[in-house]
Length: 341
Image (cartoon, rainbow, N blue to C red; front, side, top):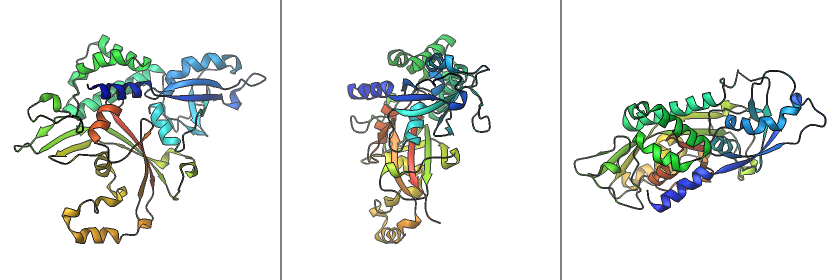
């Protein structure tokens, strides 16, 4: 791994969000109510993994009863299996720092959230995602299945503790590979290190393909806006479309496969200028595309990965190699204006 890539991955692992956690007023059994708890939450972590820090802080204020812990943001229950950083990018178009969340110890909303049994559920979700990613990349998940129990446990512990060194030592055993960075080096047509997900090169050596595990979270708004602070609050998870779909990485000689290309393959209806960028396909098509009213088409307003507002022209290979989560999924949060029907 090149030095600049190591630095980027280090920033991802060290990324954190300041949280201000409030105990829900219906569960306050002390007077005066406790002040909010302040916690620094790892971006690649999960909210339930913070409970061991938060519960002791509120324990003297809780009513008697059995705990069923969950979090909400402005009344919206937060899905525990989505990484904390992705939740923040998705729900806070205009970043809120500290991020004000409410913790509940009673009244689990089982009609909205699937059950969570603490760390065991988070670990199961992580390992299952790792297997899915391996299947997408390699066509099977045997390398994950064949990891020793101790290695699998150490890998999970490294993620929980933000231990990048241990993760870097263990993750090559899964043999996920990587995509050649199109800016920093040329891919060799015969190098096995330049493959991810069954990368293939045609006979002429002109085209390379790979399957990249992507989780795309699409938040749709019906009204246009100029500033992110004007984006309306999200009231229900029905406003989010969730795509768990691989991107077919396609590289042609002399052309860089960009983040725009990747998102276009997933959301073609929101990439407005693809016809204008395809001049070789004929002037007539460009003219036809420009005749379509922008008011009747959807618009991609914002793309965030690891808290970064991404430029669509960045090489997709760099994004994948540097900004993916530890389970080898690339989580992309996008905000779109719905097309008018």
